[in-house]
Image 1 (tube, protein in one colour):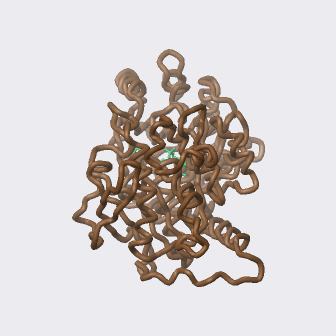
Image 2 (cartoon, protein in one colour; image 1 turned 90 degrees about the vertical axis):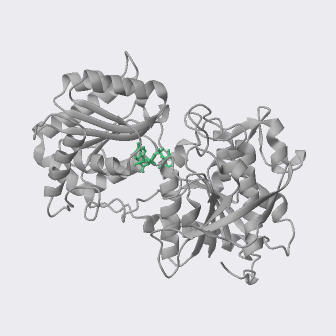
Image 3 (cartoon, rainbow, N blue to C red; image 1 turned 120 degrees about the vertical axis):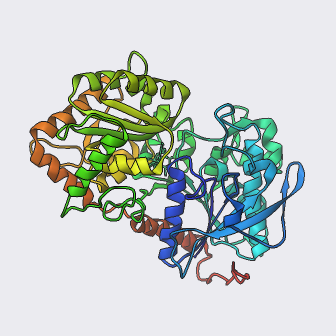
Length: 510
Ligand code: ADP
Ligand code: GLC
């Protein structure tokens, strides 16, 4: 199949969170299964043009303000199979993407012209196909920035029975329902759609324009990144006001668990840790723990457990319950328990300040404010426990990285965390981590306390859990097969019975 991924992020080019990991790793896994895959994304300022090839000729893209011209750069996605590489196309426009920040900057967290920037990206996807002569069987959009692509496909691009996109089907993957792309209705002009589409395609959201809602209403199939989150989002508690639309589309909506990129997140080959390790020889884990202590200036203490965190500092991740001044439990966790706590993260200013303050006041707590691949690998490998008290979690990658590194996750029983971690049973020794239901400072305190108690008192069970976690299969191949099944199902159901699909993809290829 020919699959086009439309996304605002993809590693290693631009990343703010797990979306970037998921898009690239899924594309690679699909290419390994033999599909032809490309990714279309903006060329942000941070993507160096010198590493890319310029495609000949410019792309004319119609947006509300008239036709805008853009250059297109291309590169092979690192890590993709050499015989069938994933091609990345970068839509280049200085005015829209030649600035710091992907969606915004600390002083302007959501750029005012975001609807225009991402409407431009979504329109450019279709023009790019025309330019290259390569038309996808599946147009796969990720999150609100790409959510206009299924809308454009349904309202306009697929209108002509013999047109180039007549047989293209669309999928929208929801990585995080908390971000919907809600803008003023006045911005609807940038879609170049007529006002009847505003209502028919589901843009309307209490007199605002909701891009994700329009994508959910129009895509041929929908999915999110874990089965449990798919079920949760159909309820008012987790639906972020879109549970009604999701329930309406339940037949076309499913959960497919993300995987992890085992070429990057693998203790047997990890280049960021001092000594690699495996279930047969865990000595490298102790070496990583020692290096982690040194890097974070923690006092020596061989037998003291380390609790680690790598996270965006935002309400979704439960940072209020942990670090909220006066009520968060991190202070009492570090004061009352014989442990060390390390964290790396960036995000909301109040939280960054609180972390700096805690690092100064507590000798067993150290936080680095910033973003570092290297330190995130070291925390995964060197910690004994990994804390993820998420308010909600569509899938979560870090708890899967933790399991692969023999680091026991301490997580809230929600979303993808519930699908990937099994709670410790201290009678039988079963389980792969420690879980709690309600997100309260007290519950986080108690569950970390339980894990630390087990560390000191149930050593054999803890070691057995580590090995159990490391043996789990979270490879993307499994997920990519599930996506393929979904694509195939769609294609089968969309063909008129008895008639074979016409060979429409006769383009020049890329
Ligand atoms: P989300 O996408 O909601 O932030 P995930 O667990 O799916 O959560 O993915 C987060 C990804 O971002 C992981 O790959 C994690 O290692 C990475 N990450 C988050 N913050 C940092 C940081 N400060 N430094 C390095 N990596 C980070
Ligand atoms: C989002 C979610 C996270 C998920 C990631 C990749 O950022 O918050 O849970 O793992 O997307 O799908």
